[in-house]
Image (cartoon, one colour):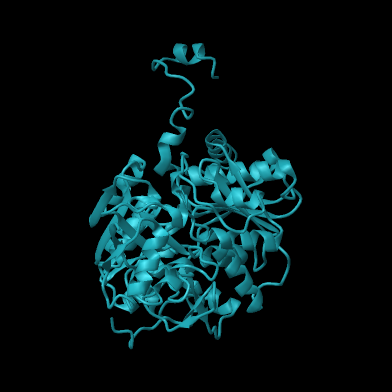
Length: 413
Length: 92
């Protein structure tokens, strides 16, 4: 593929997180020496609070900090980001906390944070000469890729586990494109995608062969939280962990903002949240390990059901460096977390949000998280996509005839 | 000896002359990798670290099974087995 004309903005090279080997920017994702993940290196220039604030109300206000061309806004994309940061006083009160915020990423175009990473992957894939936008997915990414490809006018090719929630199947299929359900779990689908990526050279699997670019999109969550807090960092943040990429990139964003002088340097703690039925990173944290032993997932939190998380070791690094923790909660606690957030703040989270709220509660109870310190939690997706999780408990108060007598008799007045 | 088929990831195809799938001999994964290295000199050092263990960011599958769930390098590789070597930095 011709890269001479590629414009990837402030990105300068790719470097291996494991051994430090450096590579030219291109469609590569694993180190040729050690298979380690490649990370984008940058040379940032001219990025100020004012230059960001003058930008559009979406992730492209941070384009000077992303591996995308400076004219990225001019090509059709879903324009995700700048979702609301909700002051969650009622939830805080319920948990005995002082100052709590919910970064509600269900407000993105396809209702999850995945629109952020896909928008960056799409921009980079165009520059790198790919023709098809593809992914293995637990559902949210499938929605985001299918929608972004439709908007961009290119082909999509999406692979998901066949037992995915019906809502996520429909909300992918509706966009058209090639959509394959695979008889296996996410890790099986992921493996298949890696093998297909080795054969189909003009297919950009956003989270496989374009992953270094794609993953950078999650930095925008960190930038937005800081900007929306008035250009400062929170004391604590709780982030759901699937592959672990989102958590590590929020930390990377905070570190970049500090280095660029856009926020004041201060300590902050990063916490990870997993479902007990797929908690390889929490298990490694609790056992003091620095390697993550893969597991076979069994949880209703399917968007977090990655048994072999690629960024697991780096999550452990970030959490330990900042003095945080990785916690996990049962499926029953996930459902309770969804109801608690909905009932206290009017935010209907998908199961991943339930995991985060459940872990927040557990971290406060255990004392790992300081209830007095300002805390942000991430709601990464929309409850409408995982209706089955709460269907048994989210039911009407009563069913009555259309008569005043019947209403009175129901005792609900 | 049992003959198996090994899928080679893009970044190792410089060792196999561009071949995406090659044959190898061995009764266990360890023997298969030793045999691969005999034919494609240097490839074992890309898959295994200095202490001889599978690198942290390499996934190896014997059939459908991630060998980390089986017996690692001692996982048996019966004749006709399909082996896949895949970079782990994917997904999510």
